Length: 146
Picture 1 (tube, one colour):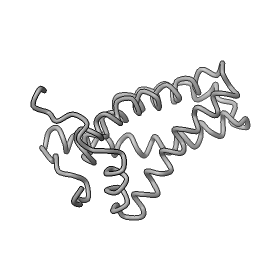
Picture 2 (cartoon, rainbow, N blue to C red):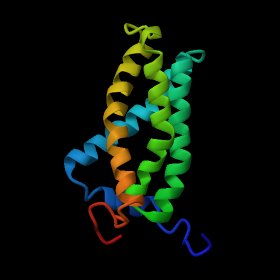
Picture 3 (cartoon, rainbow, N blue to C red):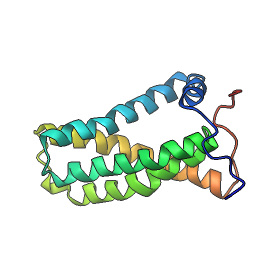
């Protein structure tokens, strides 16, 4: 690990690279970012809501691991690691409490959107992580000169 050039990519470089992604991928990534950040806003108004706490904590944990990974390795499939490590268990937990959700509340609507999005994202992320770790596909996603 000592030969890894930690934090070699700036936020501006990552944003520049992301701008080259196809529009559908940019839209999906923006949607997931908004949705994850929204968990903190929903949590402000539902502080004791266990499911919202779990979702917000999984978002925070993903950002805490995702930003250093992105800054170190760039836009690679390894960025799926945070989703698999944190969103997948949160997804399982929220699904296990399906019947406890008050669907007509703000928290319930948020959780419905989060469940739909995360149920799509996590399987894709498992495949992306497999491609990185097992198949060795470590090149940048949609390569572009950074």
